[in-house]
Length: 310
Image (cartoon, rainbow, N blue to C red; front, side, top):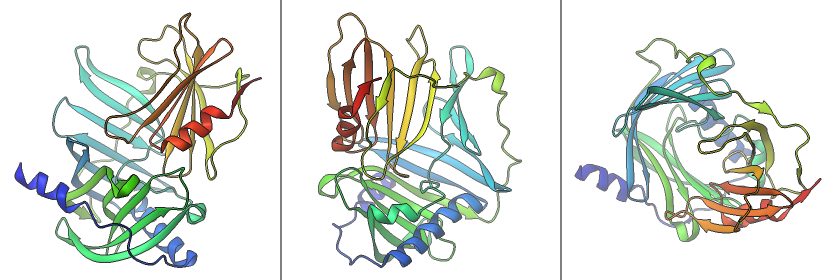
């Protein structure tokens, strides 16, 4: 296990030091990394670290026309895997009742972290090129994404020298503090050994219904954020469906849940112990609204503060 902790230490890079590159060059770098993570066939094993928690994950990606299919298998702890196809994904987890399937909103995962359309990102992030290092035995170029405002976290990526496939990614918080880290320990490009990813039957997965006539309206979103989805779904420990809204700038994501307010509701504002997630719960009329996301508190507070009843 010692090599895992050495890897975590190596992933913490110095503060932003290099000069920003022109937007045209930045777009080229972002597009190269985005295309490689979605359009290249590859398979490998990466380590994910969040605070003192680590997981080892096996990943494979297969291009499929204009989309891609991928499969991630968690190699430690309880058996769990994620299967992604086009714009949706399903998490399969082993429990007391056998395999249970849960539909996820979106299909993004490491190394497929960047959106397909990367152009708008340069309006909110500056790119700085660092040195060339080795990850998983391969040479890769460090690329820092420095946020231009307080509404998004920074990213430190390392793109393989020839293909642009991200081999390492670090979500960076205040004072260059690493919040979430990924790094391949083994990767092969240009080949996958398994058959095409088979998605489970959707009859065994929860139904998602579009939100219609919501009692809540969002007056304004943080700069660069837009609405990705608004559906009704059933959550654990809830008797009825709740509204689930998702907003994103392409990298950071913020969810909003709308449900009837309990009789004795108390507003909550908090941050996860590792600092990655921020949350705010407030009451609007007869409704409880919870805003939570992998985004800085100003972004979460901005959404929660710009809500109103219809």
